[in-house]
Image 1: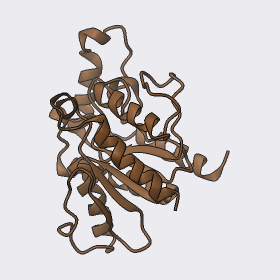
Image 2: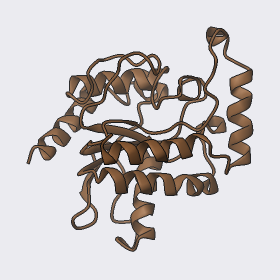
Image 3: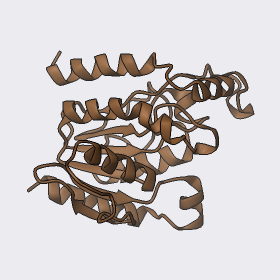
Length: 231
């Protein structure tokens, strides 16, 4: 097994057994027991969700947290819900995935030159992790970045954008998040020699069904990332 694959496997095994946040532990397990009617035959994952993708990826995709009946059910980031459907189709269209659907961990999906992670690894109530919960997960993301050494980071939403910048601030690579304002299509070379940061609105059902986010909007940003990675 290649070194990066081994290191990621060790990290992911540690993530899955994490119990640092009592509130999130209670919530994720409660959801796994009180299943949504449509998924009553499922055995929910109900644990922290590890990262997923190509161990040699140049692109790190950073989300907010697992969805209660999405990744908390399936055990794989952005799998089994509308957000995952939208993201997977966009990644396939841009050449970062081998298929346009993501239903469960055994559906054959492979990411190509991309790796998906999140600022928080457990499903939070109302999709809102507390600052201390994000802080508890930060070390996992830092280690992923150290292993992957991506050339580009795509933040799915403002919390992911700020979470990445907070890591750079804690490392002393930037003094403030203020110069790097989030918006859809934002792009910045934040730290010399570090990954280039791109931002898009989160592919939540609220955003995609209201037209705030469209496939064309994601396609445009992913094309720019692809062009950057080919340089």
